[in-house]
Image (cartoon, rainbow, N blue to C red; front, top):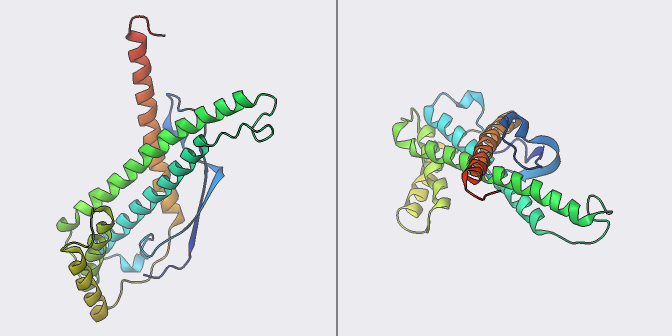
Length: 228
């Protein structure tokens, strides 16, 4: 599948600790992080004209779930790197008058956002795995649909221990043969709105989970004799 656009830009801000409040208030906001991700051939949505076959619909949803999980993984990695960086150099902190306090405040905020990003990535990858597991239940109605199912199966070999073992290379060879006979999958175009929607959905769900776990931990500490 050929991309009509090679880059996707997703901008958002994460910061501050995760309070026990509505997840809508914790959703990503535009501004701080800029992800310019070059998409692979699998990180796209198929055009509407190519979607009648249920297998093509499944492939489109699976590709989007995997791509959103990749974006969330990158957010998590950036936040993790930022938490590890502590230069201590005057003038490089938010408030040079009190560098230690500024670093502590930023670290608390980053750790809260990191926890949300980590859980959001799990939600996105879980969605992808559920779609992947549903492949046997979806009947392709065209040869292109069969190719779409094989694309997902071959794509899943990235998540296994050794993709060079039987039957992965053999399935990949069948996929190449089918494409040589019937042609590749239809061209595709990217849906930025869909990417943002799914990203926000997983972020909000993760924020609710992190807030609930934080509140649960606080309640346990309150109920413990001598706990503060």
